[in-house]
Amino acid sequence: MYDINQVRADFPILSRKVYDKPLVYLDNAATTQKPLCVLDAMRDEYLNVNANVHRGVHYLSQQATDLHEAARETVRKFINAPKVEEVIFTRGTTESLNLVVSSFSDAFMSEGDEVIISTMEHHSNIVPWQLQAAKKGIAIRVIPINDKGEINLDEFAGLFTERTKIVSIAQVSNVLGTVNPVKEMIKIAHEHGVPVMVDGAQSTPHFAVDVQDMDCDFFAFSGHKIYGPTGIGVLYGKEEWLDKLPPYQGGGEMIESVSFEKTTFEKLPFKFEAGTPDYVATHGLAKAIDYVSALGMDNIAKHEQELTRYCMDQMRTIDGIRLFGEQEGKDAVVSFLVGDIHHMDMGTLLDRLGIAVRTGHHCAQPLMDRYGILGTVRASFALYNTKEEVDALIAGVKRVSQMF
Ligand SMILES: Cc1ncc(COP(=O)(O)O)c(CN[C@@H]2CONC2=O)c1O
Image 1 (cartoon, rainbow, N blue to C red):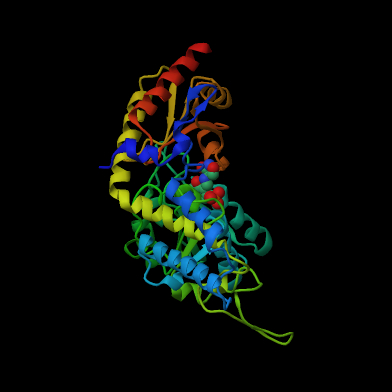
Image 2: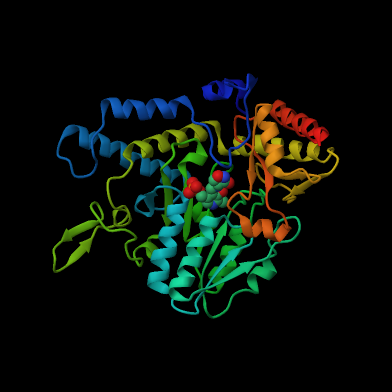
């Protein structure tokens, strides 16, 4: 286990006050805070190495390119991808998902073809499919979930038809904390000859991800959710699939040669990386990955699981509590309501106590519909949160509840 006090010292923002009260930051599913090593590395690159990457012949460009491509290798190793060419930098999970939805449906889907997603998906894994449905007439089939927020594998298997072309599924729900059995789901899909895209936005920060063990065909995550900078994300794709997909965006970097008669495209990963990449953010992401890897993903997972379990147990002592997502062993997210207190009221009053949570539909409105609610209050944990912060949350919720 790691020294929580030493870890918290790596994140100066955690010692600031809000409304003259100690900040209790529990909105990590939205974005995590950044350790000094990430911020220092990015500042140092702008100060001492800054140059555009890949085609410069001068020293700085080569140095910046070396950092950028070293970051790609760091990501490859972190998710255990077979080849560095299968690691594509994007702006985040949303762009990664949109890239596959757009290019895959262009190449392999026509009217009446089907995609399977789940009720618990984030809008970034719903709306892109709806845009394709409107454009190409594809059909979206939805895996139901039970009251505890879990997928039934038999119900999932029953959704496949001869028109099913792809499955796209969150590994972890950003509202429920449910950890989906993606490895088993992928096995079922592959028995139908159907590829699977996994939305790893809420799994990558919390436990070790192995894309080869999972055998997913595509995997997406965001840098800002794993203690890295905003504006950078990753799409992993099996080379066999990425080679078959048309480019997502056109421009510089992604071409081999351009003429008005004919244009040819770069090899992987550059075919999918149009324009100047955020080469400083990729460096920052690599430093964030180095940071969590040094702490140990298993240690982080154990710490967050203990916090989540403790929080759920304490929440159950609150009169009128309604918890959303009660899977045994769920991950790092606690969504709740208390009686008929509006989620915005609860969140606003907790904020005045220094406690930062998120309220609303969390970009998962179909999931809210499934539970017959408009929104929840969501606390989400990270490697630097403490049991004392959970106690502050529980005391805050009880104090606010007594105001109504
Ligand atoms: C499961 C899941 N998928 C995709 C995304 C999109 O990620 P980017 O915004 O980085 O592209 C999010 C963001 N999570 C939202 C963001 O704020 N609060 C949340 O729960 C998410 O939780």
